[in-house]
Length: 257
Ligand code: PEP
Image (tube, rainbow, N blue to C red; front, top):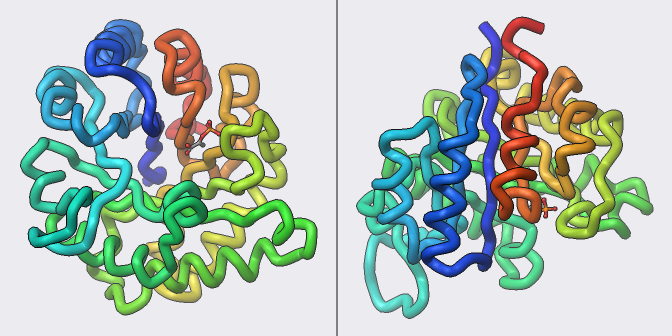
């Protein structure tokens, strides 16, 4: 059986409430649901509850862009897994490069958040990827090894079935510099090998690995045709109905390829 295919939009800290609602409505009106694809929207968390209700009658599900690893407490400004669940979100992004590099999240934080998400039945989408300096020094595999092994530390094989990974080279995020399909595929193969070393055949063959980093309507097809790219995580181009629909409606059917 083929792997899950996931198309996700990360709206980051963009959109007013009304704009977010209009965007979600426009997307659900224009979606050509291709067999077997899953669609996830990661809006700002203050809109999660309303957008989860709005998406309930559509193929889209919602996710939080981040969350803390405690259920409640004196953690001003944070949102908890209980709140994420309560707002109807099914996914959470963990370790997005903006969290790692602007907010100094460590591999240990990422791991605690993944464990917490699994405990609360929220599907973690773990983001990994190297900086341009790391790629230029030939350290991409070492970085991916550190980030993946850190994120999965202490997590048993039986617990990982709802986890997805987004490979997002930091130099490609929001820059317009997309990885070539071959570069992305090579990194996805490295990631799958690490997962194989950790969990064996079944998990490494089934875990969805998405590509993210300047995905646009004009490059989606080349990326999505690569055998180890199981969907995409889109930032900038997910903020407009037309560009995101052109991506998520890409006319290439993985499940029959
Ligand atoms: C992202 O935010 O995860 C992302 C990939 O952004 P962009 O598509 O704008 O590069």
